[in-house]
Amino acid sequence: MNEDKKLMRVAAIYAVVLLSIIAGVAYLVWDRPDPRIMYVPVPILVWAFLGGMVGVLYQLAFRKTQIPRFYTWLVAKPVVGMVMGAVVYFLAVSGELALNGKTEIQNIELLNVLAFLGGFSDRYSVDLLDRMTGGTSVRGEQGKEAT
Image 1 (cartoon, rainbow, N blue to C red):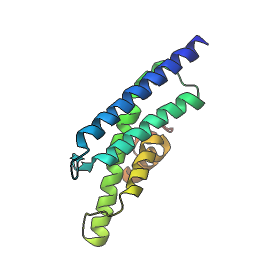
Image 2: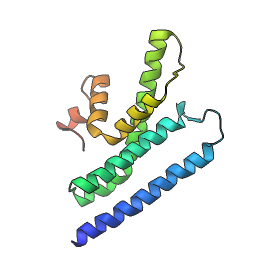
Image 3: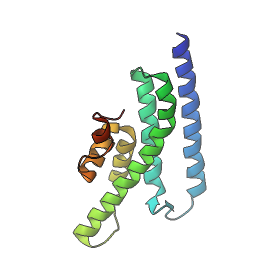
Image 4: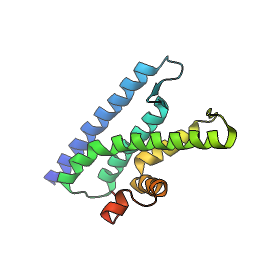
């Protein structure tokens, strides 16, 4: 029972800290016309980060995890989610360029959803990397899916 209370406290602090980060970023870029970080629109990164955060909270709520590994995963999952969101964005822009000869995407909402899924789902992210690298990503190295 003590361990459950500890995980609950960690989850609550984690949610508050990460939501504060998202609120801070939103405040900083609110009135800017097209905020980008490393050529990726900030909303893509925010949705991917949010997906990673929700993925961690989902694991906390519905699955038991190993505590030592868990603390590293708390930080890594949202960061990996942001990177996967950026990869999804770059793939979409590359596809748009190849198909239509331009890099403007009119409906970014679908990309926000895909970025969220990339942050939330390890399986989605690893499968995407496997397709892009020919099966030499995390799963190929460890022989199993990442969690």
